[in-house]
Image 1 (spheres, helix red, strand yellow):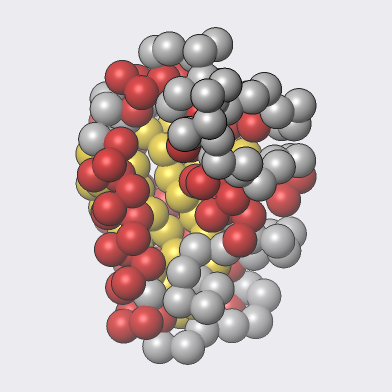
Image 2 (cartoon, rainbow, N blue to C red):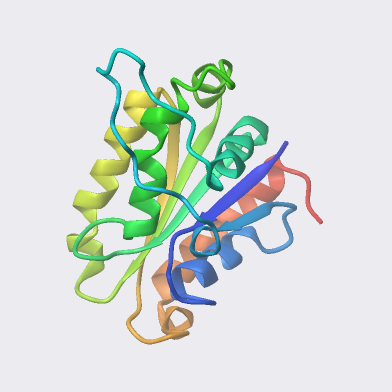
Length: 185
């Protein structure tokens, strides 16, 4: 079974990435750092006679990850009470991807893919991050993906997530559950 973690922070070794690392410690996985990819914003042509057109960027790496993963993790900082812009851009492009004739199996594959959300914020994230979790729930419902878990952590400055005992305890529990289900390193 395959796991891919999408890292949505614009900062290297961010708190959200560190939380993903805690969850995935000792578990074989692929990590895709969105800040290192060129993903064009969606040009919504759903209702155009010619439909969506090919976009020459790195989004095919995202599609490939979805096609080969049994579990995907969305790790994002909480920016303005939502996911980061680079992660939202990736999610927006799913509207195009599920209609891409080069990948007719994608929509069905997503229905058999499990999703987890890891989010870290600094301004009362356990409350103010909940609307973002609901947003992810709506996204996964639309795609018919199983949304199995989420963790919200509290951190402002780099590395501060290591002081959030609640988030780290949840990460340890999730890590143990995933190790029981997936191949370990």
